[in-house]
Image: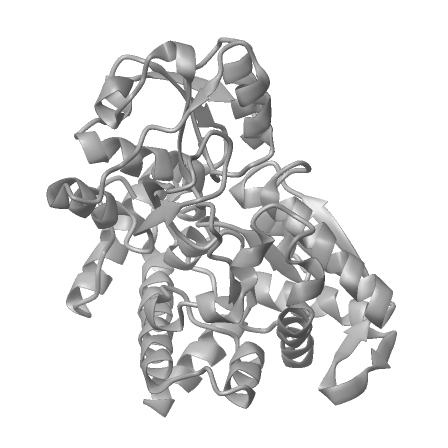
Length: 399
């Protein structure tokens, strides 16, 4: 067991982008102030997040207020327009952590926009997950488009966010609930997450995807078009299976928070959002300190941003994780007695998966095609074969 873990870490640190991140992160830790109970922060830390106005950005700001007030640490929240930009700043060492969504999983897997030569499978590590009373991603429609079920989306105008494969693949997965694909709808390309809501408000699109309580959706609700959430009933086992075949980290969920959602909630799917991640070389003390502060100060920020209640410790789904946790986070979880044997076993499985992906990438690169399109297609074939040989899930069609 130890041999492949050691080999994985050694092989990952050989990558040029990982060495670069190590070099660039060093200056950020020159001015370090020791805190109580092992909490140590530099004077300034940085997270990447979704754009301003989103739930993830707002939550990061709320947590930053705690860091400033109690630990004299400034948290810079750097908004990213798309999946690649949020994780590119993490990989380059411009931010310490990223508070995003499923793009962390796609980067681990080396798929979609991360299947290119300059990316490939990344050594992502989780700090904490947010499972809120809202939802991470579901379908939002203009009321005047008369969409009451997923099947009604056929032929409608659906937003496609440029450079955001996690959002677009999530939309494809939810469309599959009703056996629909992108070919069954009219694709409306937009430049970012906020632009998706604007497209519905301005009657350029009828359907957008996002977190149930995402602030931009308030604009749709307040517009003359109105807002409606079509439900995805959990009783249809085949439909649920189709969604989870594409997104195994999405689970059936009852959403209670969001505009127009009734008190009894609605049936949707959800995953961790935000998912706070670093890399395998992220500073262990900073990871430990961040997780500890977020847990111990939960009551101080839980009501200061939409969905922030989802950071509660009893909502951390360690045994269902699809990405390994950082050792600094595990150290704290062990200290407070919430890291179980089930969590440890799942974490080892996830580390093993990253090792298999990294070995496949290193084997593939020397003889990889030069053409961009051929490179990506060939890598996806090699990746799928390596996972199949290791008897691991390859993920659904379309990745």
